[in-house]
Length: 131
Image (cartoon, rainbow, N blue to C red; front, side, top):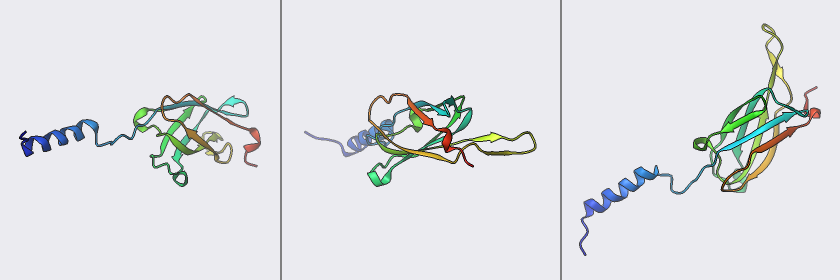
């Protein structure tokens, strides 16, 4: 059987373009809620950082927290494996007074399973408040 080298190379280039050169790395969207002292966190940021020590080579993701909810779309989502999750929030001190941390940066470890990821719930206790 005879194969034209140009056609074979073109076929592989087309496959790479169609798959986005991703080579099987699959990301998953993450949604969830963040509560502080039993109430939905009004505003903040959540950062999902892969735990390289555990061998996770995924990319970090960030999302804004509004009214206790956050959402990381699939495009920026997580891969399966160990992550370190950070939550930060500030409270307004008034129009001209600026803002201050509501609590010190909260962190926790979490392991995402590959596949459909259930909503994540993070409860930050009041004793996390900065004094």
